[in-house]
Image (cartoon, rainbow over all chains, first blue to last red; front, side):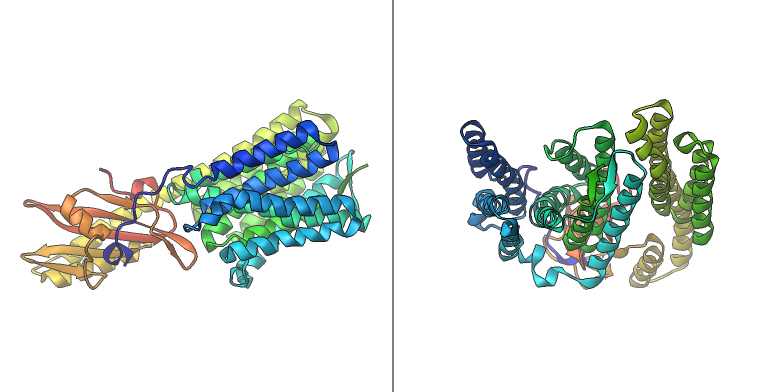
Length: 262
Length: 220
């Protein structure tokens, strides 16, 4: 039994322990510079790389086991994401560079994306959850006046899916579930931990400039992101792995990209 | 029971759809019944039933919000989401608390029977552990001072620096929220001192993969 055999764990470090402050400040400065002095397209690429790189890098740094390189993970992540985002803007096939992001992350954190992380049963459970939520979204949307379900153009959809898989989903799940929820859950009970992680994820999506800021869309975003976030926290708490959450979020956002204004 | 709850949810959804009132349908309030029944029968199943109710009712509310804006029926529909989830969580928590209270009375009676008569300490400790483990849905260990030695059940020894050793020395209860992961899920444990006339006579350790409710933890 743990209570008889194992030494007492040390007091957990503070909430912001391991935050890569210097790297985050550097990213913020670079983004500000790009916003003030570069073209809108370049500033958008820089903004995407900085925002997702900050989430992905902070997740790595918060879950670090002591590797000094993790302090600079936000910069590394932003460089890979920036190359992918720029490639996607410059050429229709450029979105393929997004594949470099999960490859880079798998090399940095095998426990998240390595072959051992993909146990079939939990990943299948996550996939079913994502499909149910995505299917529900499509049914809901088919009842609205302003949105419809589309099946093309395939090139554009593929670009969005590449962005979701490698940037949006990866950054959100690693940070909000793999780092923030994990940090809270090791201190608190499930209910407050899931509330914190889900509220933070909802705020992140409401602040996203890519989300149309209308009342209907905002309500829908809160509804689905809260359900997806809470469900993914439960999957992580049960399995100890973020791969089911990644599967769920990837399939949900895959369905979300099928929506288009009428 | 699962089939009955599922059929009830489906029937209520059909009633909302055929009522023609969409988000404003009075049938929406009927979703509370399967939610409460699921909570009473399965505890946390009430939360699942509440989420299912919200998902089934949402296609009447969210599209109406997009089409008509924040009208009164739509706002009432959104409020119903909150109420259903709140009722699901609260009912599940109350049902869980009642179940734990019932278990406590059962434990008291069983402990009395286990320790009845002139039982040797090692046997009494083993019996006590068996009866607690069967009812607490957790891994239980006991260590009790017997003169200069410790009678231990549930483990082979008390390691130096362990949670049990800490409680035996300090006499204060201890809750460990992060006992590492066991087969994927997080392990938590609490250790409560066993008091006697001469001070701390032993310690009880309860370990579980998952959460302990607030009323299950020892108070300082």
